[in-house]
Length: 351
Image (cartoon, rainbow, N blue to C red; front, side, top):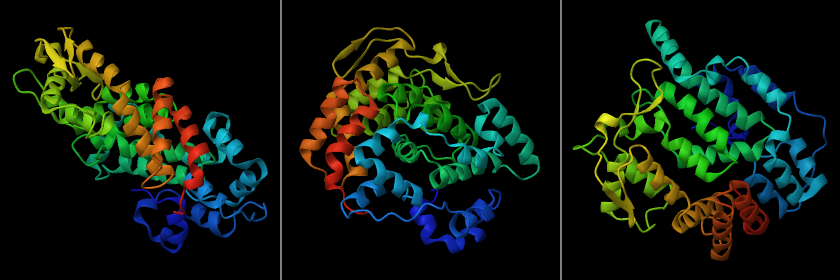
C-alpha cells in the first residue's frame, strides 16, 4: 500500500532508506520536504475547514491550503472535480522515466520475461507502485487521486497472483484512472472486461459444465449490489453461467480480453428475475447493465463514498440523497460526490 502524503510527512526520516523508492529519486522527495516548498505563506484555516480539506486530499500542501482559503470549499471542490483542467506538469515530469506505465499487456509481459532472465521481474509492478506514491504526494489533482485510491480498493486486484504483476498496470490505466471521476456504469463495464480482473477472480477457469463463481459473486457482493443487495446463491450461479467463456488471450496479443464461445454455457439463465436467452457474450453484459442501474447498487456505492469522505456512520439522509442522485444521473460519479461533499463535509471528523 503506497504511503499517503500525511504518512509520508510522519515518516519522512525513513524515505531515503526505503527500498521501494530506491529508483524514484528519494533526493527529490527530500527536497519536497526540506527545501523545495513553494514560497506561499502558511494559511491558517478555521477548525471546520481543516477536516474537509484533509478528506479530499492526501494531506494539503501549503499552496493547496492557500487556494482553498482563497476560493472557498465549494469552488475548491468544483475545481478538483474538473481535474482535467488542472495543469500537472511537475508531477508528470516525475513520472516520465516510468516507461512501463503506457505499455500494453503483451509488451509488459515481454519485458517481464526478458527482465526475469536478469532477476528483475519486479520492474513493472514496482514502477506502478512508485508512480502511485508520487501521484499521491505531488499531483495537484488531489481529489482525482483520492478517487483512484478509492476505486482501486473497491475493484481490488492482488498484484502478486499469477500474471497480475503486469496485467494490473493496464487495469490501473484503462479501468481505474480512466473512469475514476466518470460514470460508474463505464467503470464496472471496463472492470468486467479487464484481463486483470478475469485472472484475479479465476474467470479464465469458468467454463460450461464447470462454472467458477468467484467473479460472479464478487461482481454482485463487492462491486455493485453489496452483500445485502437482494441476490441469492442461485443468482450467483446463474451469473457465473452467463460469464462462462469470458477469458484472456494466451498467445497472440497475450493478456487481452477474449470471449471463448466454445466453452460458454448456451442454456437459458435467470438472474434476479431477469430471463436471459442464449446470446453469447451479451448475456453477462445484459446482467451488468441491470446491476449498475439497480437501487441496491446506488445505495451501496453512496454508502461507501460517504464513509470514505464523511464518517464511519454517515447521516442516513445523506446516503439516501446521494443514492437518488446516482439513480437520476445513471451513475455519474461527480454528481454523487457533489451531494456527499457539499452536504456532508460539515459532518466530517479529522483523520
